[in-house]
Length: 398
Image (cartoon, rainbow, N blue to C red; front, side):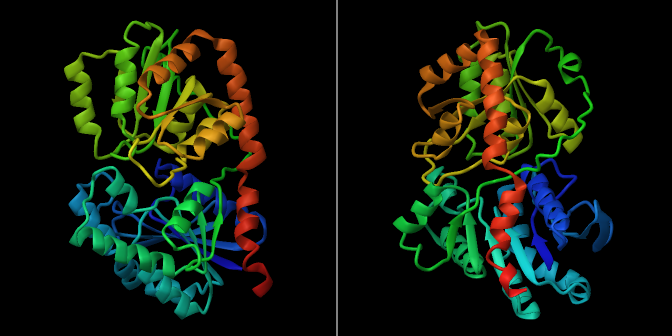
């Protein structure tokens, strides 16, 4: 089959989902299929660019700014994604007819394009749903009920209705659909995140030395720094561990909260925490291989359950996980059952602090949790498992 993968981010973007999609496309290629990736790109000089990367055909379409843009600019540019990609990519779509469309949230604005492409190709589609928006924005206080919220709900519905099958992140996401009486409207299943298990030669870029962190236990966070992640949670932890001279918190990424958080860290006079700009994929992998503990944080108000893509990077590199997440999130059971880290609920600041101190003090514990983390990845989150699960719905028809 020729499989079209429609995404917002693709390599070389450092966003975790970019590597997820690359690994999935590479697995389809390994299985004898022909993957085609279509992604917006605000940086290319021409309206479209077509390349073959690792045997995968990639169409990049120039669009307005999405990453590191204000909420208004991002919203306006995302709302136009379907029309821009269709208008600029028509020749490509005509020359590359597909048998299956796979599209990936977090955007909710691919519904119109997927519906059009399904009709054009007479083919089915699969939605990999990683973000239940606008519900999480309502929970986190970013949005209020009203005209804008209703518009987003309309787009979300169109986004979901374009799919023959929807793969959600966790069982808790299935419960969300059931509680909102949507479980009979859509064909749903749990599709866990994945990663390729091929061993990569990650060259050390000596970040520990370059950043002067020799002898430190480095708690590392890599990814989006926005409202839903509640990075204030990690800043409070760093403040509470000021007396722990060997502990250091390194946050790497972009997002809407970066400027405010940097100002907050400066105002508090904290010297055990820093936020660095996002880096490329090679640099990011080097950091994962060098540092000691992987950090997760999710806003306590979230009612939808998120499975951060960054977790798989931590597990892959055998990093023990320290997580502070929202109530009811399946991540707690996944990490604890796999003995891959320590988990508490956001707001349990004393427990969060105690867990961090425990990891600082006990290198043997860090190593054991790290080994367990890698085993958890290998047993539950392989890309081959994800690819076969998606294809199982459609292979019989082709």
